[in-house]
Image (cartoon, rainbow, N blue to C red; front, side):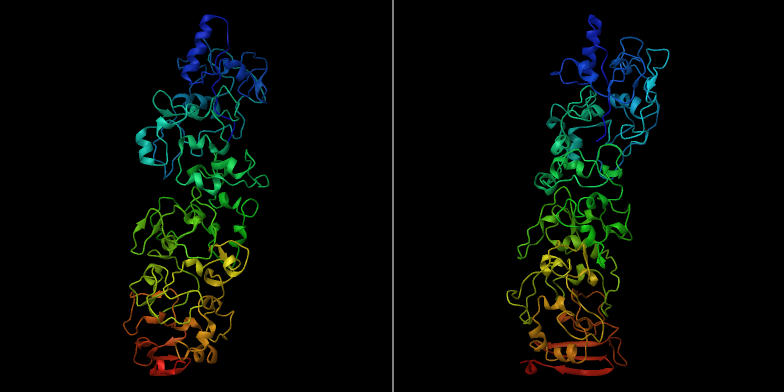
Length: 589
């Protein structure tokens, strides 16, 4: 937060008229009535531009303090007896896709503040003097945080009507009747610089009307959903070691909103983020310097959701991604509502780190708040699917995982709904038939707790392809082993698979002829989209065309499900032609 916008009051005099000026000025600027001697307060701040001022910029000889803003005579007629020219600048104002207010060009007290703080009018240029007051240290406000310039798009919006209607439309703004007494709107119910800054008193620093420790000033107006329980509002983690950020308070919670946002000269103009690159506002802490885990190192891995690959694409109001494929931290996490997740090992529909995020349901409709983890994943991997590099090709090909996992499919992994079958006899002890899984049961950190590591949960990055928690080999002629199919063997007992408990030719295929699991099985599910009609879609059968091909005269390989643990195939694999090659349960031990 930079030193604030300011409006010093007139010099205190003993004459009745001067006292009247002081009172009128105090009322006009909504100065707290509990404070009486305005000049005494201004005199000790950098808003004292007289020769006695404590700042680096001060008059060479002028002794009057209030003259730089106010005078009893020869003013421009603007209340409160304003002693400066009004800027004629056309400002670039703040805009945002999430802004419900309608700020215009600066008005009222804000325009008065800008007569110094936009840097276009000399500090000593006052109406009551024929000659400009000469200054030591520079005639104009120096470059830096206090010089806002004429581009206000990186500053908190001002000069807009703060009404009950606005609060009702925004839903995360408090109504004007709920604002604390220190935060005051002007006579036209507009929010101005003076709603946050008291130019005559600097007891809270930055000329704020109240302390902003623990975001007291921010939450005076902003009522962000989930903020009261978020980790960002309660974390006692120290921020003193973070490079490139000058935070006012020592902990995350004490800085609160200002851990990510700044009211003036923001790097990321929309939403007033400290850094221009969205992910830097997260990674400045979540690189192990403040946050519990080093997410920056996770996104350096072979396969990752790396937000650094995209810039200026994400928008909080986006409904679908279309051709603008991207991933930013805030595509999955709401920093105003996120809290620490405790991994109990039991199935939970959605984790605390994904709280209050929009999603896409199994029918393809947008939901305002996702209730299941997969709903967040479907935002990118559903109808507007992002192409995954090196993905396994299929005869029945679709990248829309919403359709692959659909419970109406003949087969699917139980992400949206449990699988009602007694055919899956290979499940590990403790995982009963009908169990539910989540996307992150497979797509997760290879060094996370679910794989015996100490790193963070979540699909930030993995050293295995497809952002998988464990290795999953998909190349033909792979020699079977616990590492090669570690992802499969997480849930399916290797002894059952190699013992041919559900398919009498499992061992033959994956051990004797080194065919990978992926040659026959599509791990997400097999949808009807693109179905050639030549194969049944049970048991996740969806052949890889680089390994399995059709016999002469056929357009695709054929699998027929003829009953429990029974079926037949007509196809070519490894040069071997199968013509209605049958198997049945009689061969199963």
